[in-house]
Image 1 (cartoon, rainbow, N blue to C red):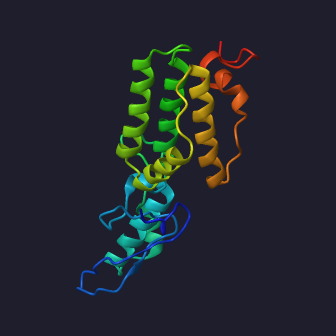
Image 2 (image 1 turned 180 degrees about the horizontal axis):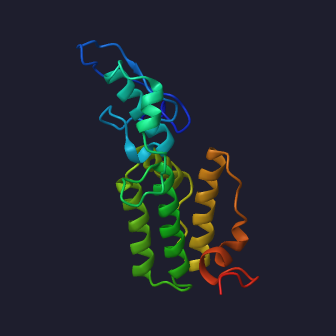
Image 3 (image 1 turned 90 degrees about the horizontal axis):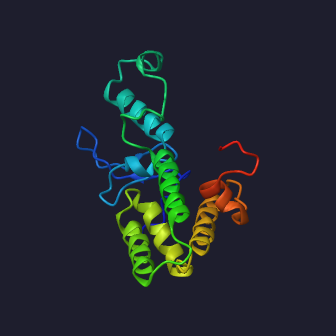
Length: 193
């Protein structure tokens, strides 16, 4: 895994200019490269992707001014459902799916259900579209084996995995003793009823 490029860090990519110049091209902060050396859309935030696109347009059309680009560019809106997801949209959807699976996982799962869940989690870490995120999750799985003995056990394990990501992103941690309220039963104050 190439740990050199993480969310929030700038990256330099050896992208070939139209003139055939082999000089590395500095990418905007937050743009993550895929394993193919090209910017990875599902690994990059919408804001960083838009900045890169705007910079590419400016470089490809030096006659246009920044003012024109800003005027003609749509306002950044990473919540457009008909666009490929950025890393943040993908992450939110992923955590919703995973926590929902934990919420529906039985309290007394059969051996087969436990095996299926372990297989799912391992395959998920291999197939996740953001390769940097996938590698990070695989590393977590190597340190913290998924606990699939019961729904509560898996829910708390998953909450711990989510908190590991939250710490890396500088986000607040969630109180894992309340995971069922958040993802299964709803809050005790009744706002989900």
